[in-house]
Length: 158
Ligand SMILES: Cc1ncc(C[n+]2csc(CCOP(=O)(O)OP(=O)(O)O)c2C)c(N)n1
Ligand SMILES: [Mg+2]
Image (cartoon, rainbow, N blue to C red; front, side, top):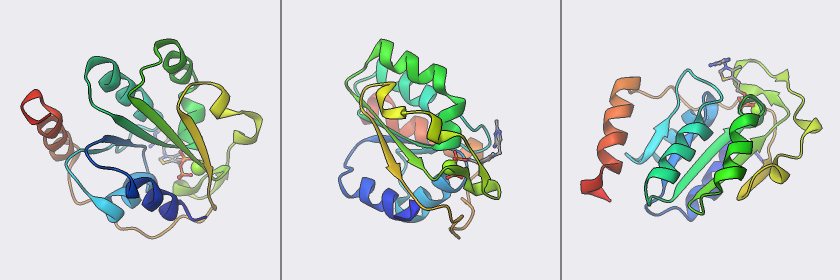
């Protein structure tokens, strides 16, 4: 399955959930498939999406979906353990595993050494193909994304 098709499938069941998308083509593809103010695109800082999602999940009643790549998930193994410890029922973590850093040229990861789904609750691995994809750049600045997202999830808009 292509990564963008996995994202389309995830989006089929999304209503009012907050979505935190990992750095790179995952964010671009989510933006391309369905841009919405409740999407936060973690531009630049790979490995941080789960920490942001976990923070929102434990401090609010929002249903939160985090979409990570395998490279990003490997960078946030400690956060996955914290996810297990805190175990918020309102957080779902998808890991789109293509065994590489597809966004930056396909450098291999060692995702085959880890059973991500066993590390934390509500964690689902979807195996996807390695191609980079061609979704265009997100036309918002990090500041615009943050402001739009903050506004969308603020107490007034729950
Ligand atoms: C801390 C940090 N390291 C490296 C990068 C460069 N970078 C951006 S996306 C990416 C690859 C992401 O790989 P993965 O999470 O597996 O997602 P994929 O591209 O395979 O869908 C890299 C290395 C970055 N933005 N931030
Ligand atoms: Mg990857």
